[in-house]
Image 1 (cartoon, rainbow over the protein chains, first blue to last red):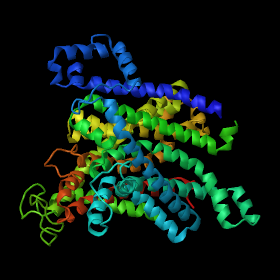
Image 2 (image 1 turned 180 degrees about the horizontal axis):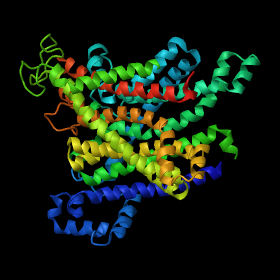
Image 3 (image 1 turned 180 degrees about the vertical axis):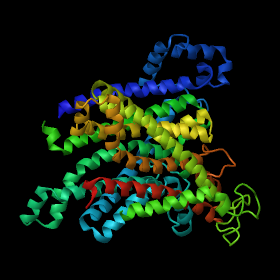
Image 4 (image 1 turned 135 degrees about the horizontal axis):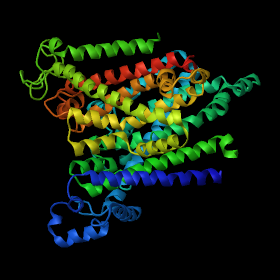
Length: 315
Length: 266
């Protein structure tokens, strides 16, 4: 197991380097003088500030040196100052990150529960459940998060008065109200995920049901309930872990739209406003952080996979 | 033919026909203010009118044109680039494969919608830029899907047999390996189309879609959200259009997968 973890951690290095090179390259692809881009036109009027930023990122030196300096700063989470907010990019990201992680985690839990139940029932019951499961898994993906969010606001404000929309209270201020106002965003973001998970649970459970050990469990007289829980679902968990890990990018991308619609001050909404306002230091910081989070999520999924699957754990 | 595939194809045909014949089906032009704003559905305006008095029915039909004009070329671009990367990776294997797949892993770390927003905001929104951006973003997925079946097909006996009778490597790949590895790729093209329709709609929802006055489902939805409590049809019509378009490609993808892959049949 330790060997697997070390090998997987070593594989992180080239991917993270590649991610950083891509982000660095994108920054250089922006037309214009990089010092002015990083400082903003206003502050670039000050020759001292201009000189400082050139020295900090080695902008007069060859590109590999620039990359090394930029990476050195990025590793310490130093992305410079946000052009519009006049605070260090790191501080703003750290302030917003927990909100996005909360939304993403709630959506994953929702997706796993709903997808798990619908997928399992569709596979073991068949008939009406089977048809409903298939339909849900197809149209759950087909309803985009922004349309679902719009529908929830439209009908929610009309018929479900007690769930607040378009306001934000921090979890630390008022946990109950915070969870209440996260309901619609979680539904908007989690429904697509639940359909993806549901479809994978359905096919994984269908496949597992015909395996020998399940037939043995049934024939030795185990209750149906424990056959499903102990012998079918436990095995089906393995592919589901991987699928959920692979959805991290989709989920974090989705927070951009959902947070913008529901006015949740998380990283996704910050990303969109940074892009719209051409706040490049902020934008690069967020892009890099999101990519690192996706990579870490797939690492965790892989490790869980190894944990669930004894064949990998032992060898 | 299974029901998923049948329903999916019928819906797709409906969308394609209404998109192509939009100017003949809708009796009002899509971009002209003709009526009082935000009037409800009636015979003259089946889906009502929008905030500046344009016919929503006509705009939804024409919006399908824009959506397909982005999605179809984008998926073809992604497929072409994906084959250029995926075929050599799968067929040559070894270091080439390792290198290309690690390269794709890096791109997968960035959410598609985030990449699309960044690139489109730098290039500027136009139909052409949307096609290029979305096409490139979906390339890694295509490359991976193209590569997987090639890995196993190239080991099959009939490939070895034609090599033994002296077929060139080029002929082996184009005549024997690619055609026999195409089933999962066809499924993926259909599923990718559904994702691309959503991506295009999401970009236009965020104001990064085809520039106005082009009617686009995502932009129609976001423009009319502020009036939705008095004119719900304005958000429902384009929203349902997106669901039908995405759903049809999903149905076709799932249906094809069940038809082509015997393991999925129950």
